[in-house]
Length: 285
Ligand code: NDP
Image 1 (cartoon, helix red, strand yellow):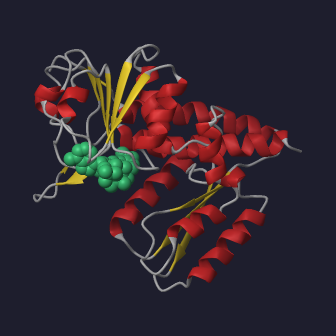
Image 2 (tube, rainbow, N blue to C red):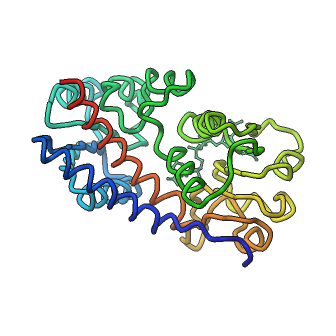
C-alpha cells in the first residue's frame, strides 16, 4: 500500500492521554468531570459502543455513569431521567445511545438534553452555533475525522473536500467543519448524479454512506486523503467501511482503516466534549 495509514486507535489513545491532563487540572480545582451514558434496551451493538465509551472515560479519569433502562420505558420516563441528569451538578455530559426503541421519539429526547451537557452535539443550539461558525460541542464523528486529518498533516485550507452523505450526525457537520478550515466543499448524497465526477476531484474525501466498499479506486484522485466513516457488517460477520480499502490504499495519499480509524476517534471525542463541558461549567461559576 502506498497511502499513509491514519491510525485512529493510536491517535485516540494520544488524545485520551492529553484529556487526562486536562481532567487532572479540573480535579485540582475541585471538579471531577462526569459523563452519563444512557442506554435504553439491550441492543448488543449499542452495548458494545457504551462499553467503549465507558472505557475511554476511565482512561482519561472521568467519572463515567452507566445508566441502563428497559426497552419498555415510556417516553415521559426517559425525559424525566434526562431532566434529572440536566439538573445534576456532578454530570457535565449526557449521551443517549442511539438507536432508541421505536416507540420513543428520539428527536424529542435528544433536544431535551441541556445544550451545555450535549456531548453528542445534536442539540439544535449547538448545531446552529456550528452553522454560524462558532463551534461549541460538535458532533463527535465529524470532529474526530477533522482531528485525524489535522494530526496526520493533511492540508485542508484551499483544498477541495468532498463529503459523501448528508446526515446530521456525520455528513452535514463534516461539511461545515471543513468550511471552517477553509476547504471548498461539495456535499453528495443518494440523489447526486455521477458521483465519480465529484469524488475524483476531491483532495479530501469523507465517506459516510453506509454501503460496504462502495468507493472504489477509480473514484479516488491520486494522493487524496480518504476518511472512511462507514461501518458495515458483511455476511461473514466481519466489519468493513464504505471504501474498498486494499485498492484505494494503492492510490490515496492517506487513508483510515475500518475498524481502527474513525471509530476510536469518535469515542475519544465524546470524552473530549465532556471535558470541554466541565471546563466551561467551571468558567461559568
Ligand atoms: P445515514 O443513513 O443517516 O446517511 C447516509 C447518507 O448516505 C445519506 O445522506 C444518503 O443519502 C447517503 N447515501 C446513501 N446511498 C448513497 C449512494 N449510493 N450514493 C451517495 N450517497 C448515498 O447514515 P450515517 O450518516 O448515520 O452513517 C453513515 C455511515 O457511517 C454508516 O455506515 C454508519 O454506521 C457509520 N457511522 C460510523 C460512525 C463511527 O464512529 N465510525 C459514527 C456514525 C456513523 P440521502 O440523504 O439522499 O438518503
